[in-house]
Image (cartoon, rainbow, N blue to C red; front, top):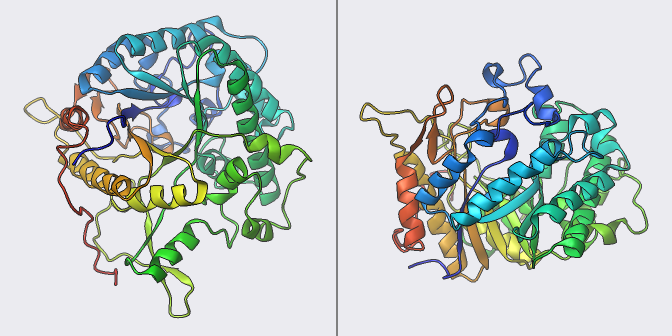
Length: 463
């Protein structure tokens, strides 16, 4: 049993998490540079100043990606490396870096998939109001134009923004991510609306100016709920929970995806947020709802739901001791079945898993290798569930493992290792973990080496 013949096998990373060189060659500061300087904000006082030093070691890293066998690499661009102030003057050295990186990937027969924004918002624009500023959608469109004009002769796969649930919700509502603010719902919803307008305007720029045929999508979090049993009642209860917005919450699917695809906010969300809604211009929703080629989503875990006694959905609690990653996320392989299935049913787009992976406490063993059997087991289980979704008719076009390298894990600093390649952050030595060699075999066999059948972990609290 294998995956479709044109299935995309990739790995992923993000600019601030791996590049380092935070003040090199004219790069401007981002909000993450500033949060890392706030005492107590990041585990251990860690920063992304050096990270994996990918800025200087990209050729070595691309060679390692080729050794792993990646067919595609999802990277993000540092907005402030290209436009140090966020708008205005273009930094030629910053563009030249991405020029060289794209060329190196293509020389290695690895297709670049470019994310325009993965959280590292230019600090100068933040000082001008950031996503609250009414011009912020145009700032993002102008940045998109600079990038597309330079790279679209070689880049054909584009994603506008990564996880607004995080850069808005965790950055501006919960305060645990950059810029570290705890704002009210009026501000949060206005910023969300501006980020959605930025997405739409960015897509318009790509469609109008790309020099080659382009595939365009966005990458929200795939907030996933799964039926506790395969009864129609539980399946419907999980669907309702996955696409419901009964209380104010940034951790949802529809407030971000419905405008992009349907051209309107969800009705239950409009009721929930009725007292806090921003002013919506006459043409705003038409601008936001640009045609997309795929639905990109990041899925790591999920929650089980059942139909309660009165038919209302209720989340099923998990028994003590159920498998959990060091990030305190439940190991729930079925998330890669139900997440893509529900998202495709609602939005009618091909689905691509843009992030999925395991944080682990890996270290170099006495034999000099890095053994990470839990990552292999985790990814095996999730990929088997993803294959089941494909077998049941869900058009899943690709899978990008997070991450190709151990890197700066945001507020967790360097305490969490997501990579298939081990990085010694003192020496910058790279070591392919066992999972990297295993993933190479998965790619070479197009998944045919994965076991058949069901690979979910037992959960005794499920009916």
